[in-house]
Length: 105
Image (cartoon, rainbow, N blue to C red):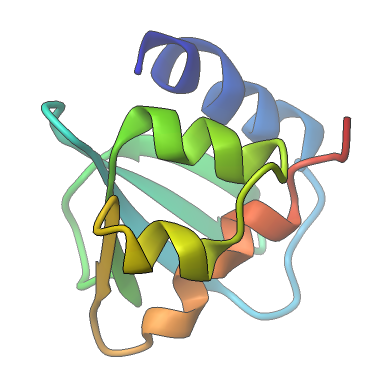
């Protein structure tokens, strides 16, 4: 969880400072941690505390599953079917967008 909160997500915001043509927001809840929010819009990608307008999607996920998804070692479907992640909200498909901006390693 520390790798995600303190390194991976803030680094994504630094490397994705360009504006996003279609704004989206995802509230990310790592299991056992407080909720945080990823917002993409004209100012680029921002990572901060949860709050503000209703997010497009909410994602609860175990930190180990998030790392496996980030490095493309597991598919989102396998993580959801194994009950290691739960997605809900008015536009739940938006929860996959943060995975699309993570560079391949």
